[in-house]
Image 1 (cartoon, one colour):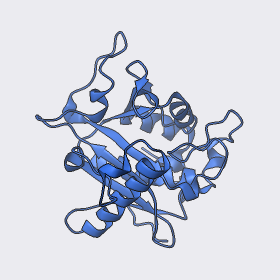
Image 2 (spheres, rainbow, N blue to C red):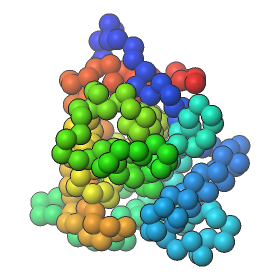
Image 3 (cartoon, rainbow, N blue to C red):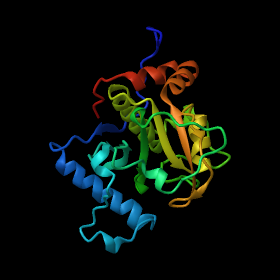
Image 4 (cartoon, helix red, strand yellow):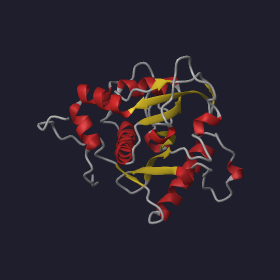
Length: 241
């Protein structure tokens, strides 16, 4: 447990993240799909814009996903991510591209897992050389995580991860999958959000490999290195901006 005298710190004071609840948040979901179109189709060129005439990017995994967005003080969407659950009819997105596992890897039951997917931060908050789509700086001379959280992009990422963590704890999810670049995995490790590689690298919107994180291990690492961060992650209090 986190010590009772742990200092209360807001690690994302300029942003507010929330789950997009449907059908109540249908308008916010529409804006999130437009945000995904802007980033994945127009900025990154991962998907063909002409395939989305309504300028809203969505796919078959949305139905079985929990959706989260981060907003800035003006109310504009600053970041987005979804957690995709497997169903009897449909597996996780990464398995359609990352089909092999490393030697000795055994995956946990699908019922305890979710995949982090479509993680993106607005171009407006990706300002520094070396910033990647998730909003982190991954160049070798990037500053430490404690200093990084003062900047906007890591605040957005932390805010989104906090909401995913709370959702996961409340919905029986212990393991997170993510298909990501090695540079992002290293950057997350510096923040004590350690993901272990479970499969070889492949081409999936660029060179990525499948990784997995055990939330119990994440809690242990974060709690040991930064108890205040773990306390903030666990807090369900509304953060107003």
